[in-house]
Figure 1: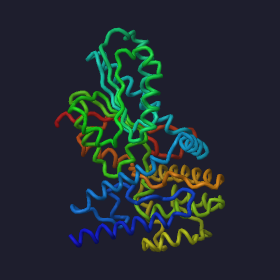
Figure 2: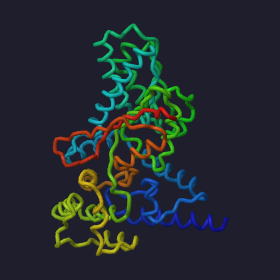
Figure 3: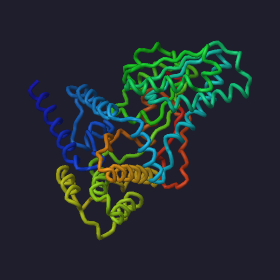
Figure 4: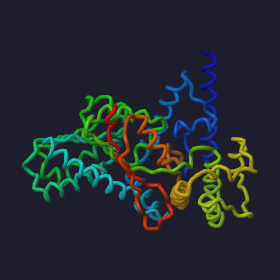
Length: 394
């Protein structure tokens, strides 16, 4: 018991040290427990049978802390930052792609079964459900499906009381609900994903949708719960998300810290961006005091600063460069306002290959993944929509 307590105290000290170390930034790094759990070792945290539950709970709390501070003003600012970073409105593009795929599947489900059940994981204020229902409404009208079905069930999962209320309003103001509301039940579940999914009857969901929410779960435990809730033979999980690996080690995060510490030095930012994309760093690079403090805390050897990205594919490096551009844009937006961002940089983003691996481990087969095309390009696999179905052998 003593060793267990001391282990947790040691972990807590490291968490506190890192959060305090980046408190100067307009966008703080945030808790290192928000990184993907499989990368904890790189951050100096070992997961054991004694501490795994504690780490899971604390990682969830770290995300909840952020969600409690965000609002529509912040969402609008983030969307603008994405545009200014040359990424377009990525979340809107992901919503449309998820919605189009989900609507086609729902129409097929209605034609086969006469009813459907859909769940939106991390529904937010309802944009992913709205995109799905708008697309479904068009398909229903085009296929003259209006009267030939019995009922639908839409479940919205979201841990924020304000957001889930707005999500329900969004759905109930949709054209689909105006046309088919009398036979459509809308229900909100005010819980974290895994808690909400455990409330559902096994095999009761035809399609689960999600956008930019799965990366808010460091441990991926919810995927198993989701697998249990989806209908065994034909059910699908359709998700859009951001994919990069900037937060998988302090060696990679260092370069974001280095840039965020000198936001007014565009030459330095461009040099770091070029390094992330193609491994070439300007010889004139000078380390800031904040970056040096971060590097020395984690014992990073300055002679091997180029190693963190050397084994990545071109598409993975471009994805990391894309998220770099995004956070620098967010940093500048808050710096210009002399404000501190209530959202944090570090998130449990996974490269596409790792997400596919985790879905497979949870019992899904990924039918396909589609990279979202942004006009400026150079983002690799940063934004991707995946369609997964239940593994038939299970």
